[in-house]
Image (cartoon, rainbow, N blue to C red; front, side, top):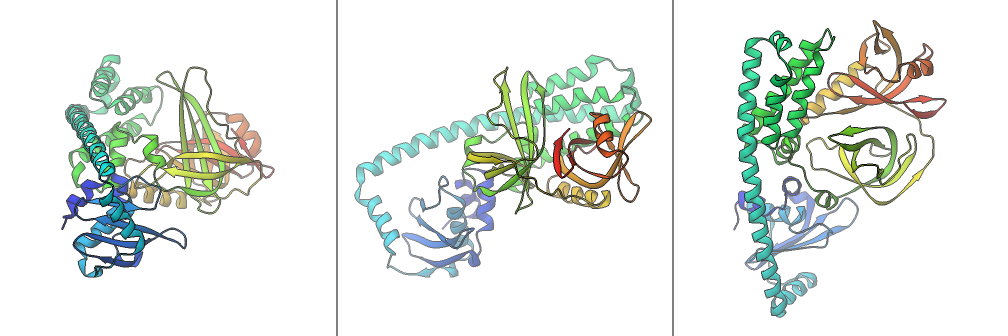
Length: 435
């Protein structure tokens, strides 16, 4: 009937394709039936109910009572199940009422069908144009990454110490070429590497680590088609191709009471940005809300640190989902919650390693530490765990953090960048206080 590759090509995006593959198992379905005209079944939802899914084989055309765009993950899952396990389908010429009504409506309303087909043709042409633009951009990015690979290998071959003798143009030229190749995010990383040399005794290790990350992107892009769909999307996102918010909001949402753990604001490329970290009370899932605004317009919503957001989040497709969008409306309440996190740096390192296995291009990792003591050593801030292991901390609000601790262990939340910990909040008298 269909090959697996054909079925996956029907999917609107990589995320739906991935989740459809996860649903292509008999235990997720009941009442699987069909014939030469159509197949149908009932797919288990996250609750007690089931989604009604049908496929008109001759189209194929898709029906599902879930709110997602079609074909949804349930339709893709059913098609994969039929293609790879046809014995699971009971052959019958008797249709359930909901399938019969759908097929009859499609047959009887010819005008509507023609209009629908015209719309599909137009949509198909748009998709073709979109794919052509995407392929053109991917080709441009591949050319830029080939240049980056040459630059990285030449720089390593000459030795990182040689970069100290290089001026502004050495970093700016390759960064500008990345921007021209639609790899602006990588260009920023390259220009930022020059700042590592400014009096930092560990600059060689940090620069080598960042160059290794860039090299991993280069190698990953060369093997893009061999990666799982969600990891492909992650790599494309790191390289500069992002999913639109409307598409993210069509993904299945996660409902919970989300504690606002901390946030940071700044300016990037003349855009104001805000990063808000949340953690689900029931799911324990971390989420990053990333917003950008022009000028002095201000951000659309206010998320006080330590408050609770009651609502639904939609996560960007990822092999390690973190970034999310808040679905409106939602409620914010001030309700103190106990803070819990890693008891020592060994457990933190293990969790971070697992995250990197899932997503080698993970940019920032949320971390909450229990019972850590901040201290200064040679003008650099560190935190110490119960085993006397230390972690370097970004020097911001040093005295506020030291004053909150007063030499005693406290709870701290922040971002781990892979090189340094950025504290965003700390617990004081049972409440989370923004740093």
